Amino acid sequence: MSNVEQNQYYIALAYKMQYVILVVPPVAINVSNSMWPKHSFASSFGAQTATYIQPVNMFQHLFCAWYFHDCDSHQLRNEVSLYIQDCLDGIPGFYNIMHRNCRTLDDEGQNGKKNLDGEEMQLIDDIKHYYNLNDKRQDLAYCAVKVIGSSMKAMNEYFKKDIVLSNYGKMSKLLIVGFIITPYILAARVKLTRTQVDLWEMEDLLDESTAKEHNFIGPLSLLQESKQKLPDVEVQLISSKSNPTLINAAKSVEDPLKIISYFARGKACNIVIGKVKNAPTYQVDYGVQFALNMEAKTLNASASLDITELDNCIVKRIGKYWFVYLKEMLQIDGFFSSCVKPCPFDDPIKL
Image 1 (cartoon, rainbow, N blue to C red):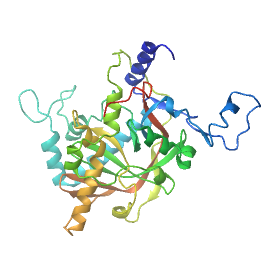
Image 2 (cartoon, rainbow, N blue to C red):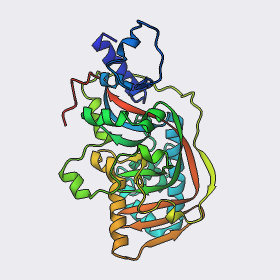
Image 3 (cartoon, one colour):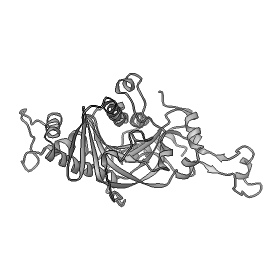
Image 4 (cartoon, one colour):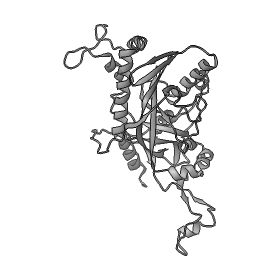
């Protein structure tokens, strides 16, 4: 689209409607075995492109991920609420901490605001409010596997991989095996298959103080940066016609605590389901890595663990982190693509 202002308007409109600006195929075409008509424009690329024609340079790719539509995003937030309610009912320590952190005070400073019917709001309602699970204006859920930012080198290297080319623009089934609850986020843990793990190019363990000191850039910070200087657009939310894909995978787990190996590559793969308002972006982007780093230190120190078994899950507490391991996996469909900045590559995000 040549009209820049019109382009920015539609981009702003897309964001307000909860969409994420993605690139769809053909982002890269394997032309090694392709036959083009003689003297055609496409055939003229033959000598210059040994293997790939890559229009990716037309875009500034920010991060690659599996993306989920609004129905699944909403259903996933509802699913984690059910497990949180189980934890509230079965673990007094969890209830006390959630009550202390999330309980909403009324106008007179008393515990428990009232709903529209005049009834006192339950703690689970306060938790949903605290983590913005009911916010219909938030971005759709995604499962990031590669942060690119403004690095053209990183982008080109990633998109040359056969595994990326074969999965890009396609749907994949992801297995959810648990949740991690931090003071800033609610995240679903994803168990990657042997094929999916080859797409993973992020850290699995990170020290919280190190990430803060070095101002690590992650998906949320890049996404927020891409929205700056866009016009404000008034829209009305409409109902999605997408079919939900989140289901019980009908796969029972023999030992939930060992469903993801402590040494597995990609063990930090996750979907951020909810986040606290004004939470630091590094806490949202890498909160799971911080939790797993704390877990690794605890295991290395052979410290005793606070573990509770409930009907549908096993819950483990390590410091300020809560790990919920499901006894039956969930399954969700994700679209593998990349979020792009709505501008030419020669106008990079300043990092």
